[in-house]
Length: 292
Image 1 (cartoon, helix red, strand yellow):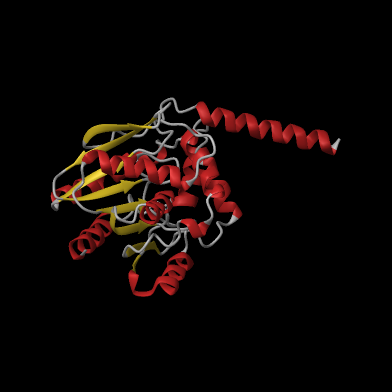
Image 2 (tube, rainbow, N blue to C red; image 1 turned 30 degrees about the vertical axis):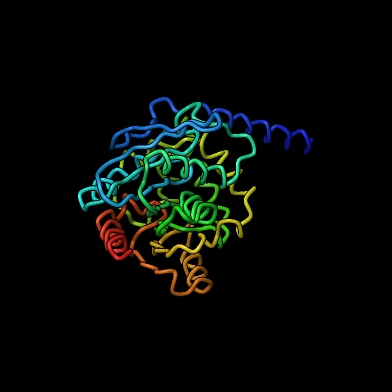
């Protein structure tokens, strides 16, 4: 009987995952700002959104999230004299890429293809949020001549995620659940305790069809292949209340890489960071970009 129960539970879990994979009706991310472009290589189509002029800043989003999470930051950076290029990760647009046996290197190659396509002069700055921080560091490791500096927002990968937080993180992608139910898990995993209302665009815009291959790529890519971020200078924006990527991650980078790593500790923010303190985060990034 116990074996049958286990099989039933596993079947139900697979059914929920299948529903989550295909269901995004009414939950699409808000549109990304900027001029839309695409680059195709090896049968892969990568979308991106370009805004402003000046030194190029490439923006790579979080696990299963859209490039539109950077809308506010892209607006501030372009107004501050930088060109932003927000990269869409595979799976956000249905049919936007192949997913078999991906690693972080595949996603980094997508970003490199975008950089080549836009004709960036010299090296680019790269901002990676959460999962995007891993891809940014892989890009700098695999294509060192491309990256001028790295800015890592909510940078994990060293300290394991607690089981209850990991569970909450994945329930965020179950778009068939009522928003009031998912909202509790989004708040628990991604926002600081006592945070103000979650912005609507953070209740929507969760793509399980993107998150699943990204999670598998994380398991398939040894940390030593991306952790160092090449030899680029690194700014880490560390949230004081980040339950997914706590401060031990930033501390480990600082110990290992010394003066190459600068850490800015952002108070009263969780893993989402961008919608929680956009003013402070943008100010820190602009200051670092102008110094590098």
